[in-house]
Image 1 (spheres, rainbow, N blue to C red):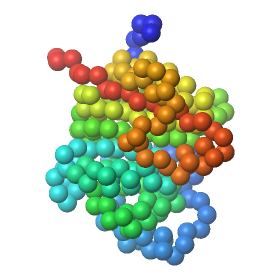
Image 2 (spheres, helix red, strand yellow):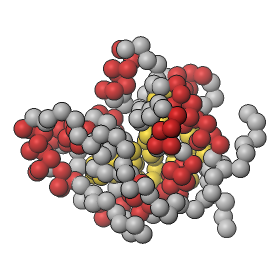
Image 3 (cartoon, rainbow, N blue to C red):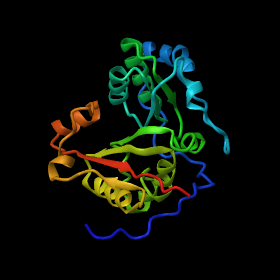
Length: 245
């Protein structure tokens, strides 16, 4: 591969756009899911951190966790719920401003009994800014909104500013996993992350990005896309070791 050009600045952005783009609500929820939003969500919810606040991950869970994983935009929650069930000693934070998706995840938790999930039903960026440096062992950005119009590309989550945030909170050697079934978005995420000097792309053969790893649970969105003939791209990056000093 060619040498990488200089990456984006290391310091975290100081100002956030006020608007969170995308839908906040969908079709009317069933009574069961509405009840979960009123009863279960308050026990699992993380309040959006204020600007400049610091969040201690250890204080979020009932028992000590050996690691912390974060999923940004968890959709209907199948992927996050499956990881939480398979890794009960890892704390999971899911960020999703779409209320119907939050309700779907709550249903998974209610039926599966996972006790290691916490939910931020808002923008993920204040959370990333509040978490300690090198505190996250794995982060996921899976099938994000493609924002296909060129004037909306700046709304895509993966980009220079948010890669700064992810680089700060990820531990040395931690994985950043991304996926999309829109080739333009997949190439966008690949290019921006590959250009960032703190990340190393783990693919060695085309099969590494064409096939979902065995420990990568399938989401309902991905399954529907495959059934419709859309081929997903799976991207795995490693956070490089920090240089002392």
